[in-house]
Each structure stands twice: as C-alpha cells, then as structure tokens.
Length: 410
Image 1 (cartoon, one colour):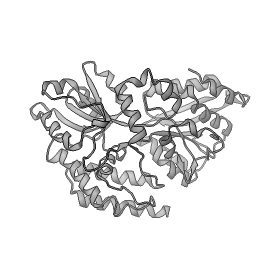
Image 2 (spheres, one colour):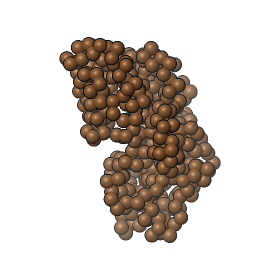
Image 3 (cartoon, one colour):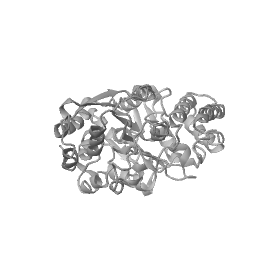
Image 4 (cartoon, one colour):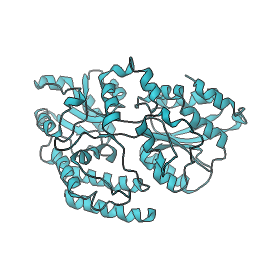
C-alpha cells in the first residue's frame, strides 16, 4: 500500500528526527478503518508518526477555528473543506504550496484544483473530489409498477418529472416517502437554484443581497419547499446524512440525491437493491451537479515543516491516492487513477455517470473568503424553508446576515 512515488521524496529528508516527530493532524470523523490505514502507510515509509484526530464535521470546523486563530505551531497539517481554502488563506493559515507542487498541477482533474486555489495560488492539495447521484430503490419501483430512471446522462430526469414520480412512491400509511436530499448542506442544495439559473453570490465573492435573495433563488427554493409542504413527498425535519441514508437503506425512502460515499455506505443494508441515475435538473435550466471535496493544507507556523511537507507531498502520489480511493470511494483527484481503473472499477454505471458529471456539469461552491459565514446562514435558511418558513423573508434575512459578516473581508 505504500507509495513508491513518495519514497524518493521522503528519502530526501534523511528521515531526520523522524522517530521523535509526531504530526498533529485534525481529520474528519470517518470510521477508523477508513482513516488509519492511510496514516499507517505514511508512517511505515517515513518513520514520522501521525496523530490524527477524527472529529465530527461541525467539531472539526470549530476545532480548526480555535487552533488556527491562536496562530501557533499546531496543527501541523489539517483537512481543508474545499470552499474554506479562501477563508484560511486570506487569514494566513495556509502555506503556499506552489513550490511544493511545482509541475504537479496537470496530474489533477481540473475541477479539483479550483477550491484549493485562492488569488491564483494553490494553498490546499486536493485529496479527492465529489459528485452526486440519484439513488433509487429498485424494489419499491417494481412494487409501484414504475419504470426505473435512465442511467444515461443524455436522458436524465427533470425535476418536473421527479415530483409526480415521487408522489406515486409516497405511502403515508406506512411512512414511506418518495424523495429526499441526503442533507440540507448548501453543498448539495445549491445545485437546485443554480439549475434554475440563479447566481448564488455576487461576482466579487462578497455580495449576497440581490443573489441569495434574488428572484431566481426565491423561485427555486419555493419549489424545494413545496416538495415537503405541498407535495409531501419528503420527510420534514430530516437534515442529516445518517438519518436519510438509514431511511433509504431500510426501504422508507424510494429516491435520494446523495454522494458517491453511499456506494459503500449502503452496503450495510443486506436486503437493499438500489440503482443510480444522473442528478435531475430543471427543464427550463441546465444540468448542474455539486462538486468539490476535502483538501489538505499545511499550517505555515508548523514546527515540523520538513515532515509536514513530506506528508502532503506523499498524499499527492499515485499510490497514496489509490489507497485513499479504496478506503473512502471519493471520486479521485488524480487523472491517473481514473485512467488505470477505466476498464475495471469505473465501468460501473455509477462511476460512468460521475465521470461525465465531473467533465460536463460539476459546479464548485462559491469562491469567497467568507464561505464559512455564507454557508452557516444559508444552511439555516434552507432548513427553515424546508420546515415551512416564508421563503422570501428567510432568504432576505440570510442575505442581510451574510453581507454584514462579509464586511470584514472587504
């Protein structure tokens, strides 16, 4: 599992003080078996210990804010959510990776570099990327006598087609719902207004008024609210990935827009027979799919710069990336992984769809140094809209709050 491409780089360090160095690395709270093997592979090659902290996503962000604001040597290396690159870089919390990754950029899928870059400088190395699929329960479709959605992106379902289909698959008497999004994170839901034609932030990356509360956004989010409040095809108040995945896996949800991690996560449901189809879109608009994922950055104040840079450089190797894909199944950031697995792993319909989306419809989240604030207020607004709040007033309030917070970046 060790990366041969990383060996030469690590060897150039002379393993200096390796046995006495332990890198502080805050990480996402994925299961240990999806994290520890990656860290162990680097440890085995370098002799440098990795003290990873697996934290739930909200706790990860809070922990990083506290530690980075202290402006000291910890953490050494940390997991960066793509759209937060600009925020961390603007505040001096990320090392410029231009020299470290010199000549390496062409190895990556182009869209993976977008959110690791701020002011034309690469600050965070892409660890993987992401895409979204429409998952559907084959058994529930068969029981309802309905044809399964096409896996051909050229024949993708429209949102207008999905609503009556979801109504046919909803069974209130048995608490079975027709459709839901996996969560209410803007990462997933922004594709709805973007497909409608909405611009979700101003061209300066700092203005929400007229965009977050603009008419296209209001119209698209009114459609979203109707799924739950008018058509009643989705479970109101279900906001978390784990809950929605459990509903889908247990046969209480017929269709779900969700991430590729479900291709592994749904395996725990032994009786589940599911299929996948491309992400729906509005007939009046265009196909848009969410993309962007986790990156890795270096604290410029680390006391272990040689070891930290060695770790990030190693993570960019083919072998480290291939191992990471085996562990977590995020769409690979390296072109080489796609090419090597083209006739094996990626012949699966799900991966054929993902590869198409990454090339044709993938749309990263807004690039703004204030993304953390933008996401926080917009997530709350989307949650309130789902549960019945006035759409126009809720978005206007969110835009006002976002613009107030953006002042410090101007």
